[in-house]
Image 1: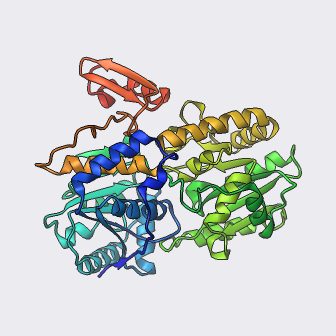
Image 2: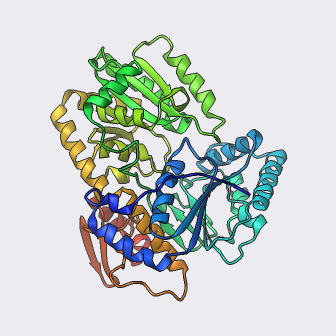
Image 3: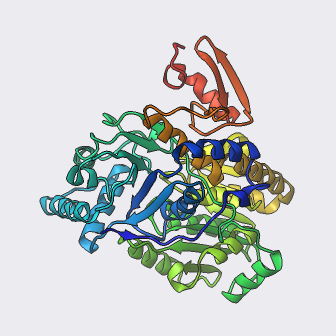
Length: 468
């Protein structure tokens, strides 16, 4: 039997006054259709990354809504996770190669985990490439199978994609964070576009008094009388932590007492993380104002919460990115962000909300310096960021998108009155209060931001199904 991850109990009622009421009302009505249905989410690891954080909130809330939901993880050894890391990187375009032995390792582990997957469910969510092979070895049965890809696979390594694609044809649906992430020749239909979200009531994002946050950071050695820039991310080359160090050094030429905190998490399936950690510690060894922390040295969700609240600037210098939940986390806490123009980050920071988008080390340093020197502008951007996260990037909106997809996959059911979902045709998010609208001969379209509306006009055939 696959290992089940224990989760606590959560109540959707606790989100009243935090998330928009209209989202909560629609979610409650739609959930009535699926009361008693059995759902499972399967991924590679119970901790250390954005997927596990999402599931730790989504699963108990689904249960609170009366939908019987489990979370299970793969069984695998180091050679298997080394192979899946190559697949993960290759699907993002890295020049990886799968040897015959690597392919055999993946197949053997997929077959083993399929044998361990004994339970019956109505809906099965498979997250990312690691467990994608389960369906081929287990068989579909009566369930609907959904492959949820969290990474940017728009330009995959062709050899890696050809290998992975062979396991996907029988899935009933797929979910991507952005339409642009869908790889060429994608074999699954339908494809839903559903950006992820943060849980505002989790330990990482819940309200934390300033005095307590200061005590937490002082306890682990951060000097609170100095300015602080922070990057929170897995130790991953796509997050460019060495580029963050280079940008920090440029900023220090004008802000000599600036501190840098690199707060990383080491995940069970991330064999590459230790090498990146070694590179970071080597690069920062002679600078006492660079602090490197990990979840394995006692820095967990509460400490991250404190960092994101008390930092003068949060940096997320991603080169490639699926979504980058830490951007919404910082914006939710009212902290300005400097982030790479990669993946789903521009969607979170659309229309100037939250901070400044950059490309390259020099631009990152310049933007960070601007926000450090102009606290008024930094505060205005941060306030807009929190408002955008409240409207579009909290967990109830994500659940509403998920249940809407399950409704589309369930034949013979009747949609409850009032539960019709308006979705932005560009980003796929549920939209209750549109920032913009477009009326065409095919109907009315609503958008979460002016940026999404502009993108729809650049390719109306793609986004709106009509000729330019």
